[in-house]
Amino acid sequence: MIFDKVIVQSGKNGHKINVTPLLLDPDNFFGDHQVNHIVKFKDLYKNIIGKYHGQFGEWKLKDLEKNQIFILENYYDNAKYLMDKINEIAQKIVFNSVFYHDTGTAKEYYLLAKLALGKSKNAKLKNEIRIVTKRTHLKGEPTTNLSVTVLWRDKDQLKQINNQPILISDFVNPASGASSAAFILAAEKLGIKPAKIFHRSISLTQAGTLLMKKALTEMGIESVFYSVGVASELSSNYYLVGNRAVADAGHILRHFLPES
Image (cartoon, rainbow, N blue to C red; front, side):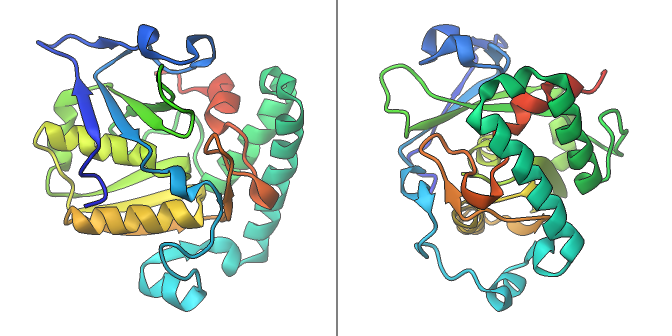
């Protein structure tokens, strides 16, 4: 089983975990420092770094449709144009990280994201459950090891998704797949498991998607993936690179967090 060696560390007696002393680089960790869980994947994702070379199966349109993986830029020129524009901004940010703090660049990026997903930052979604996950690296581990923090905004709401189909919506989903996997594994520790997951994103990676698909199947969870575009390469820090870069979308879009 793909997730057999993953460790889910949880806060004890209703208390949260302070992750600050555990982080390799706390000054550059932009998530919550008080969390419900830390999910430690160790070196599980190391083999998906770099360009996809078919280690989890072929990436052909016929096979994708059969496996319920749908990439809009395979069908629509407008989707391809949108991904080209996002990549253009992301390449600028990757080249000079000062643009993470430039509100003009961030707004341009946000408007493209809004166009791609069709939702504003304060959109009210029926039965929405807000969960905060953040990938990070821990002290004493190589940076190719991944861990993810999980914070429940309202843990009681999780009961609604047990044995139900759910939608996971994110800018990139999956890149490695670690963030969604952390949510699923942390929820499973609480006795909660969805029956089917619809993944909706602006971009995803070939390796991350096929690995996640296989892992969910092993867990008895059906899955469907919808994305505007696709990236074929991951950096050593698990960010999309090549001609479909998105930079650190969460860090850029922090300027446009929901008001509640």
